[in-house]
Amino acid sequence: MAEQLDLLTAKMYKRTGTSKEAAESAAEDSAAKRAKVLETIKNSTNGLSATGVAQALGWHINSARPRISELAGTYFEIEDSGRRSKTQFGKSEKIWIIKRS
Image 1 (cartoon, rainbow, N blue to C red):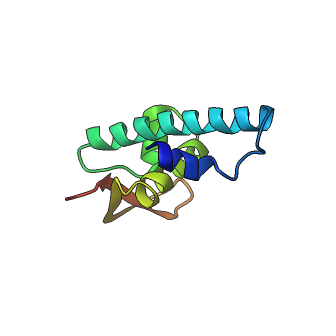
Image 2 (cartoon, rainbow, N blue to C red; image 1 turned 45 degrees about the vertical axis):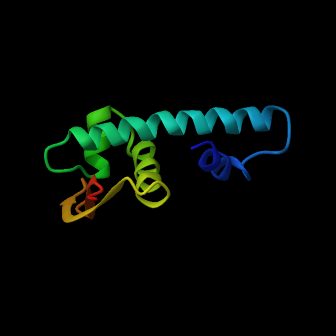
């Protein structure tokens, strides 16, 4: 996981100083949020959309969606269920589930 963390933060900061500290703090915050998103999806009966995750956690959608993208793309822990729900704007969004082995 440390290697993955390094890959995610490698280009986010200058070599030293406050920029590096901010990037490290953001990476730690993202890791904690990813864990909460993963747990929320695990505890759901039929999976959740990004909107559903945000609502369950009391977050803004812009906090949930990037963590979902990371869990699906970088960490391969969740996957598209093939089902869709509608957003408040009538757009389709994926229902995410824990990755099947």
